[in-house]
Length: 332
Length: 207
Image (tube, rainbow over all chains, first blue to last red; front, side, top):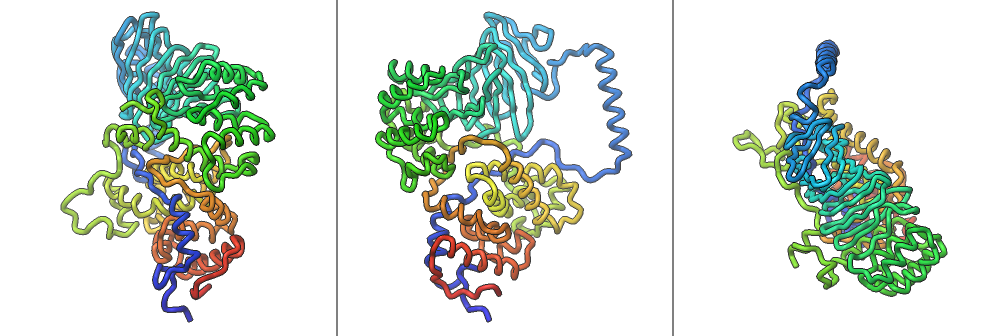
């Protein structure tokens, strides 16, 4: 026979103390996301294979006809893709100079030495492509908007759920976490990102850098994406970070010695780049300038515990956000 | 200061064009929230995007729980987005509209399993302004739940994390109320053992 009240089952009766405590603490993980952006097309009912086959044959015939005509209408005249305007100098889309048009998926836009172009990133933001740049559209859909910057400069301002907007560069991928940034890249993959709003993840060579607003990082170093540093980092610290990223491991001592509270994000990113023994040192220094949240122990960080890493990262971002430094604080 | 807060808050898209959260159409016979999942599926198939928003509101938390049972917390929201997009795109493949809850959760299990296999060297950040920061104890409790057998861990996450009651879990998963009750109590019993917590309840067990 079941009891009259069963708090675990339906919340009735007096709360079980341990269940209530678990509800309270675990509630921090509760779902709070917004609904996804749906594709324009509504789902279609199941169809037999015959009309699908006929449609595919017609589509293949249309593609063949287009190819035989040599693509006379050009790849950038209209249709799906990113709309763009040439705002300075000359821009080429495909093999044509164009003042405006639509960059299709698979297409490339190139600017002259004095050129610039502005693109709409679907409905989620804008990109300004700088001079002597080459930008390709890799994918454009509800789950991902993906560009490839082969060389040059771009300014991106995106207002979308994290990880929707991605930019590939020759060596590193920049994943938008809701932000605005400037990206410069050379054909060999070197370059720099400067984040002005939100934060960006840089991934490459098995490493990952988290670059928040007010920080900058090299796009590629011998060890992967560069270690982030605040834009107004001292010259000594910046030099030490550059030496460390170039493979001079002994520079770790200088980084630890130079870092202050606003440089906490630099130290945090080092956990992904140092040995377990060195993680203990990084922990000690970071813990001294920005104490770890409760439960994030030295042992857990040395072991690379994902939960501890996540908790400290969230805590640090909140602390960094509160830093009263004009250069670090995000602009309105 | 308030403008700065926005920097660290997940912002809404610039335009609301395709979002499913748009207001439901007026003039319906019943509030869509009262409709069954099968009725809502039929409406979506007929082109009603607002009905899909209602499905999302009703099922997002159970999908999130399924994801949270398999992937890191910071990835779970992405899995939810992905699952609902896939469900929307494949809704015509669902033969029995009444089977929507089980069908949706199977998509969620598959997507979450795929996501868990992806190499990700560093845990993505939670949004510290928009989301409360889980304590270390919360991480430990979640890890203990995730170590339970699948049926227990999903049900307990729905109850303890998502705040759903047993009857709501049964309705949204397609499981029988009896099964959910058994999963909750047996799962909680094992969880208490593993967390070293003594029971403070007088609940009625396995039913």
